[in-house]
Image 1 (cartoon, rainbow, N blue to C red):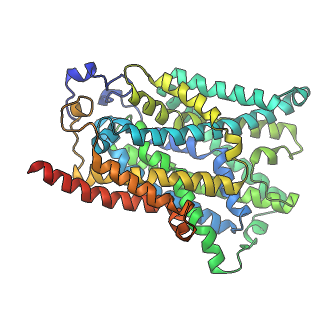
Image 2 (cartoon, rainbow, N blue to C red; image 1 turned 60 degrees about the vertical axis):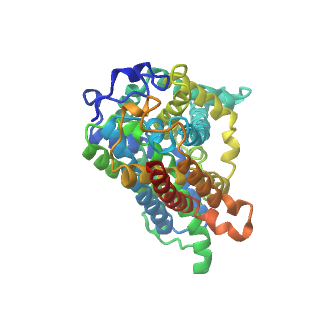
Length: 466
């Protein structure tokens, strides 16, 4: 790792939370990285994602295959951007300074932060719903209280704030403890579905409701984009975690073991349980909290809802607090700490009214997930081209914190490429004839920004050298 000069500590672009993590302070091995992903992947929105595809007409294998393929695709940029975090110990906003400039990095960082705030609100809302169900079963008077739903929402929000205040090491310990518990909870839900149906046969035998190949692909294409978009957030901000990894092997193997297998397993559980609910209750129930409310055994409900609440908490504090907290700190390092940035995230998440984002599976998958993937795909493309193609994995760490060095305040090739990628990815929202570009929003944005940035950056470098 490059030696960082002492004068970066006096830079206005430096604070302790954004500082490079020294090798001696890196404590996340393969298990911790894998546990992080298990904790993030096993959550209510993942279940809702899988069940939503079944509700939309897919068979179980089509739904699980779509989710698995999407996660295999997004794993690649995660490993590539994660490399910089492990090599230099720097978080995503600092890495973005290399490609976008010391000030220009605010743009991709705030795009990431805005999406994370929305996700924070979504996870807090569904976690609050789980807590509300739990309290309603445990205390007979609870459901009679005015605004009991909002009280539960506020209480679950406060739980998240606790971990924000305690810091990233508390997150690591919580994730490591919760990972096996969450996997057992998922397997227990699968066991219920199998027991109620007398085996997996009734689930496996449910056909796709699409009559033609054209009908299937019309649903599959935006669904695949949504699956990639689901973790498009972490595909750019994974350095926030890999900066703590003990080695490149730990971050690569940990991510490979933790993400795709967990998403495939839990998505299958979501599909199986949603299919079981369709056969048992006559409707595919894609919200597990609603489903658990139909269970007859109070003890089972209490245990299951508690596990779901823990699952939501592990996802929220890792995926939706750390990245925006660092992004907000990057805006004003001397004035905004990690804790302050996390608190800002918490309040903005409420203001984004997550209950509306979860109105139905179409709004959740095709509106929220696909839409923001068009914002973040371009960022991933630019970061990867800059770090792997142009800079050959070589960064000057000191100059990422101090003005007047290798990196400009604003790197215009990156800003132009970002605008081109986002514009083309989202134009299908306003031009119906170009809807296909929106359906492939992440892929379009990633590809366009990668090519435009490569061409402009090389030309810019040549002009500067003249």
